[in-house]
Length: 355
Length: 77
Image (cartoon, rainbow over all chains, first blue to last red; front, side, top):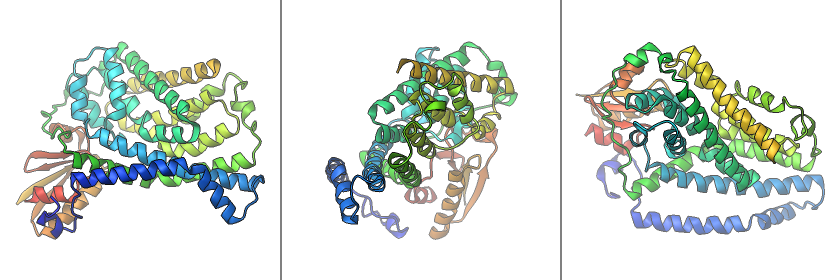
């Protein structure tokens, strides 16, 4: 393919061959592991080079920033690249075929899980919703997918992993899936199919004539992974740096228990509901919320409260409600918001109680 | 003349796709009839679940994400 005259004529860079990709990935992996192994040393050396005396507030804050920024960016790039490749094995069409005719329960669990690995953009939530229903995916199962896909995503997981450790990322993954499964199941059990807008029920959906989109060679999969990295990391890095800078400032200066009285473990009963409510009108991506999460946890807020807040911001947002309003009647929208919010609330409360 | 439709409800990727198709056609000097389809019922007729979708002479050739230049050049033949 590298000598394709057409792409040369259009100024498209020649494609790398499979062996070249493999060599490149192995080399990148070696550099990645080496860089990850020397994060502390790197921060030490730079702090010393600037001439800062360790032990002062300022030096500790700078050290924290220099340690955390490369660490989080490395994790993000690695996980996003892997996810870009994984996503080439799944397409909405293939996921729909897997979910078609599945019963409530099993179907919800499968839908929530597929929501993690299927490429999804909230701008096509409506075509996807209609496409699923028209192919015989039950409504409750479809909702499990629609809740999980934006909420449990690789960016949120990579950032939580990088900043708070794999345990927090794993908890977010497990709890996010649980909310998506239970909320979808509940909506399905309420049998609200008659609360779909009339035009949706009358719609004539064409045969899925779109290419399945999973029929790739490995070179194309690697290219997709790299595109994913450029797109996501290119968009997200300012938030990451802002988040870590904020974290560094807190790390160096603000007393640990600053937020503990209103969002900590011994906070009043209303702190989790308030966090969920506060999250609904807020709208940002997983990266945008991370600085806030970092600040809250750094100041002594309880993990359950903070995770509930984060889920609420990502999963429930006004713009998405407006998009979904095109296909759902108000009663169904209200049910959707109510059920998901209740699920997130439960997660936050249980989490704070158990831990 | 090829008829090309870009299906999408007006997201950023849809507009980018439209512009890219226009650009590649101009570079190649191919005459096309380019149309944007924004109505959901119309989009659903093509069975497309991820936007932007691209339809060339009535056939869906792409769904989801911005297609790359080489792919677009391939459609224009």
